[in-house]
Image 1 (cartoon, chains in turn yellow, orange):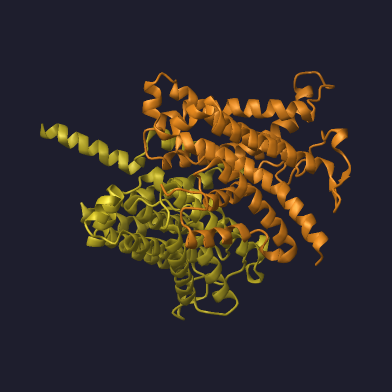
Image 2 (cartoon, each protein chain N blue to C red):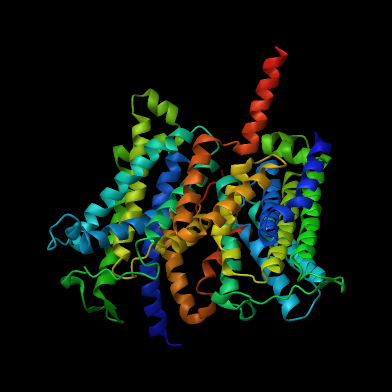
Amino acid sequence: MNRTLWIIVVAAGLLAPYAIYPVFAMQLLCFALFACAFNLLLGYAGVLSFGHAAFFGGAAYIAGHVIKVWGWPPELGLLAGTAFAVVLGAIFGGLAIRRHGIYLAMVTLALAQIIYFGAVKLPFTGGEDGLQGIPRGHLLGTLPLEKPLVMYYFIFAIFLFGFWLIYRTVHSPFGQVLKAIRENEPRAVSLGYKVERYKLMAFIISAGVAGMAGASKALVFQFAALTDVSWRMSGEVILMTLLGGMGTILGPVVGAFTVVTLQHEFAAIGSWVTVAIGLTFIACVLLFRRGFVGELLNALRKYRSAEAD
Amino acid sequence: MSWDLVLAQAMLGLNQGVFYALLSLGLAVIFGLLNIINFAHGALYMLGALVALIGYNQLGNWIGVPDLHINFWWALILSPLLVGLFGMLIQRFTLRRIAKFDHLYGLLLTFGVALVLEGFFSNFYNTSGTPYGAKPDMLKGVVNLGFMYFPTYRLFSIIASLAVCFGTWFVIERTKLGAYLRAGTENPDLVQAFGVNVPLMITLTYGFGVALAAFAGVLAAPIYSVSPLMGADVIVVVFAVVVIGGMGSIMGSIVTGLTLGIVEGITKVVYPPAANTVIFFLMVIVLLVRPAGLFGKEG
């Protein structure tokens, strides 16, 4: 199962730019990585953050600024964005895990709003216009990222790294403890696990990978905008994860592809996209809380157990 | 910076504070019985203002009576009723079905409802705002408060909101109906066993909380212009207010809302760049010092 999973992911990723428009493919990958990062927190640790746009968008602004104004090479820009998200994740996580459940969601939302207002007001962010004209530059001083295919494979490599990191985390003893906390936190405490520390660590990893996705997005589209840090973005990543199936490895990828494709296809009809997203949210919560991949896995499991009888 | 200016901003802040109080009160009432955070609260606040606007500007033309304009006083009664009814439908047909699952699903579902409402009305109404022209004549002009001249309408909106807030507090804390409600918050199964129709009570409570939001929306309409996104920014601040106050007590959410409105108003004179974020920073401090919130019991 695991090996086939990896072969499918790598093969599909390598062939994608020949089937679809590379920029769109890169957009899909950036958001898929964002959703995977979010899934680590919601799907495996059971922590609902409503402020992940702060990491995604914050990293986009930082990466954009150091590349455009300070003239850093793209790989260092991505690192700077990711590092910012890690630090921010440590601060937000440290504050947010003092509360549980619904309160935690509200705390992260309010914290993320500080970053949003920062992006509106701070001198280097370009306010309403956002940070525009970020040069892609040359990777390691040689590979020209202006070329769509070169850029695509660079982004694909980043995606693979992030995806692998999440996969490793989930399948490590650390990941097992996270799942134990999700299932029954008091019991995990009574078994002697420092639950807060595990949650904080998951929060930081999740924020870092989300930042990596955001910085990549800034490099692909060559701008960072207020939409990247707004709470709608935090809501969208929840939808991607929920729709695809939280707590599954591939679910967030499927969910992100679905939501981004929907937005792409219906971009012409303006605000109706928001209505469509909202309705998808409602339908998802009411009808299939396991998400596409989760429902599929569940159906498979039922089929297998029926066959075994 | 003069004291008059600080006092004037504090009064304007109090005006904003009564809206925070009405909204966080509604959230607290709903949370008490349903255990969910109503993310649609901001959108329903917007809907309250929009219903008033439609009643004044458009309804007459729609039904072929161009001279019909629903005035402000009727809007103040009808809009919360209509929006409350709409909320009860949402609760009855969606929230009730997921009540037995993790309460986070309630947050996500109401987030979806907020997106649908805001997206839908953004197609028909200007997001930069439409003025609501139905302010009654008797509330125009200014009154002398002794230390400053204050717009009559704003003073009215403060008094009306405070009356509704304390009325709600009285009903919940001091009447038999409120006793049922509080008992339902403590132990719904037991209350049901005593013959109270708890599912109906939950639906009515949700409707009431939503009606409070709509009432705030109608009161806000003559002050701010009516826009499909007017609730989106307010709701995040109200969430911070709720985190600061904690949702343990009705009075706590009222007092926190009022106080933070005043703090925000004063910040506008003392240090303007922080006016938008001061409440969020206060939230951080409260989380560090007293994680359960000022009036909260940790749950």
